[in-house]
Amino acid sequence: MTTLPRVRAPQSPARRAVRLVLRSPGALVGLALVLLCVLMAVFAPLVAPYDPVAYNPVDRMQGPSLDHLLGTDLYGRDLFSRVVYGARISLSVSAISILLALAMGGVLGALAGFHLRWVDTLVMRLTDILLAFPAILLAIALLAFLGGGFWNLTLAIAVAYTAPFVRVVRASVLRARREMYVEASTAVGASDSRLLWRHVLPNASAPIIVEVTLRLAYAILAEAALSFLGLGTPPPAPAWGQMIADGRPFLETNPWVSVGPGLAIMLVVLGFNLLGDGLRDALDPRLRS
Amino acid sequence: MSAAWLARRLVQGAFAVLGVVVLVFALIRLVPGDVVTQLIGLEGNVSAAQQAEMRRLFGLDDPLPVQFGLWFADLVRGDLGTSLRTGREVFGDLMLRFPVTFELALLALLIALAIGVPLGVVAALRRGRAADLASSAFVLVGLAAPEFWLAILLILLFSLKLGVLPPNGYVPLSDGLWPNVRSMLLPALALSLSLAAALTRIVRSSMLEVLGLDYIRTARAKGTPERRVVYRHAMRNALIPVVTVVGLQVGNLLGGAVIVEQIFGLPGIGRYALEGINLRDYPVVQGAVLWIAVSYVLVNVLVDVAYGLIDRRVVYA
Image 1 (cartoon, one colour):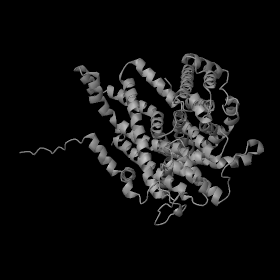
Image 2: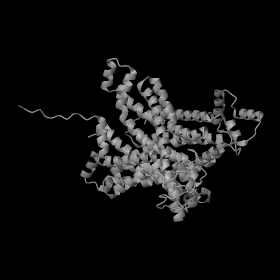
Image 3: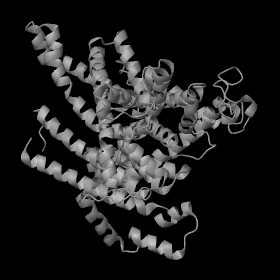
Image 4: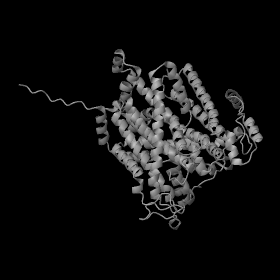
């Protein structure tokens, strides 16, 4: 009697991707940085040793010490606590804005890729117009006319980063539409919406996930830049960009006021970049060996 | 590159410019309430009659298409309106400030090329060795650090600690080339680092790809000296993607210039726009945004054309 060769069940693409990401040191470091920042934001009251907005004139303008890991600012506020709470602003603005951008870009991109020729032309010309602005300038312009604040800031960043999502989603949908299984599904009479949700979008998700991760890094940088310019959440909210701007007059005496929050921005952005690159390598079928 | 393609690309560019014009026109209508209510909020008591007069001056009483027609007609004549604060022509102000932004962006581009290309080539040639790792570290930091923060670190190091470069202020070119460049060096360096990082990355991967191609092996097999293989055969083709990256990144360069000009007190278009924003000088903001977006579109058209000229393999359908 012959024994049948043992056949391993094929791995799902998602599990395969997770395995590949976990095997890449860069992506792991990225994931760790992102998780660290998310935890810091969620558990800010537990992590931060002081109230981020309470004035404490006695302790003003101190350098880093064991009491104050990053020192204190002009009003004696603990900079480390402010950086910890700042993660909340940075992450929530960027996450909401990228989700909004994905929703708007996703709808437009799916419409463009899925349907009539003139819809496609219209959407793509609109996208060209948005892309004619450097993203940060578009956000600045919108805020200049809309006014600042949390929601306007979020909306401005979302609009500024909508165009790339239109392109990615459209390209993915166009690619998926040519696949045999979509053709088969059409042949058996599946409705358009079933085609889109059940077949096209799930198979188009890999490049979209990568785009979301990498754009989160851009959104964090944009939020920081806009609050640096005073167009973000109003003080005393501990926005990282605003904190860097606040420290500028005191560079000579206490550089930590500006340096500390900048380090935080850099580490989070680095985290999303590394994670995004890792995901791209893991999910891109062309790179699979 | 065919004439038909060139014509189509130009038409496409023109459409983008037109779209930008419409969008900038629409922006001012986004102001909550309207422009007049916002401005009055700053000035205090203004009678209803004066408000109506201001609305008439802004042309806000006309139907939207008429407003746009009038605005567009002025625009074509090079009239971007006058500043609400200084009464000066916005177009004239922009012409005065454009050279500063242009010089800043150009200098940043040159610095980025001077850092990125050699670093990328060296990283590819010394793959996996110390030089490659160092360049990877530079790429990661350069892409993650915000330029305004880098600007502050550079001021801290070069101005406050070493005292070799001025922390802010602008010296016009008419006061001599070196004093002018000296005042631009730190801002340009701050602006260039993320582009330098992006270039390093693309040059490295492009160089690695080209070095693995058959024609390079052929060149080596013929006994071509390694230097010649690297610099003459490989680099010429490996640098083609650099043009694309530069084109894509000019937008970041122009956007970043807005912030960097503000930090270093350079009287460029970005700072003009931000001053306009702080004073709610809407025509100024409109003019500056329009100017930057239009120059961005033009640069991208130029980059596409240049790409067609450099790489003969590119056939635009």
